[in-house]
Length: 317
Image 1 (cartoon, rainbow, N blue to C red):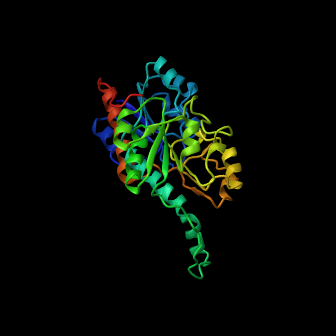
Image 2 (cartoon, rainbow, N blue to C red):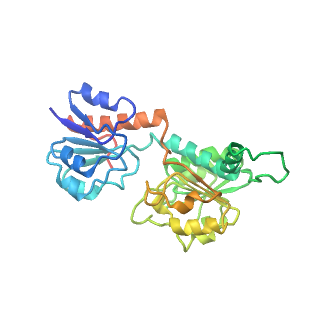
Image 3 (cartoon, one colour):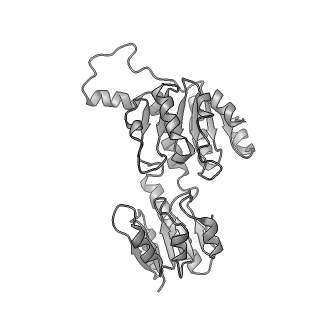
């Protein structure tokens, strides 16, 4: 009997699909990252792993995989896995693209609107019973109409975000390694350099994967180019932004607001972020809808089933 180890209890029917195929399924039941000791122990005789971004699947873990043929990462990103080393060991790595596109784009729009209209400050004011009267200059925010949105990464999620922003009367520009003709045609978007985007955009939204080339892509040298009236939103990976410098900018009110769903050094949060009124913080919930998380788990299961029954992986990295 083939054994599948799942590093956390997942939503949906993924586990059931594996059991229906006659596999032995072992799930780490606690709602926290699996310990290194337990991961190495369960990996030793597993035919497949279903992992999360919180699991570091490095050379030590991969070397412990005596039987494993596939690592199914329950995320669109896979920076937690040494993919090249796994490939050298003839282990297939898969991810879950497409499924979380709409959910993440929805959250991107929610963060942009929350920042533009200062929703965090307003909500806290109400809970503290500090709203005593309507005032003509109370919590003045920014309108969306007429604003230029800079999309960093014009792939699936970047495109879905742009689609949601166009009805607000915004103009789209983008930065990407490649020219995206379909993106340009659909949204009337123009490809620009990263520096031009940061100088020009009223709203900057990040939609690129984390890699050696994108680590601190937004840093002390270019973040300072942003307008004082601009908004920065990140639903991608925290390490893409040089967070310490962003915090300095926010303290000095060099940009209007930031909306963050991801953080450098996550799950640890820089305590200075918690003190800032002009930052809207969320606990990495970009894909956190019932439909999306269920679909991600089920795609992981289908990838495992495909590989272990001699078929091609559905979404190999």
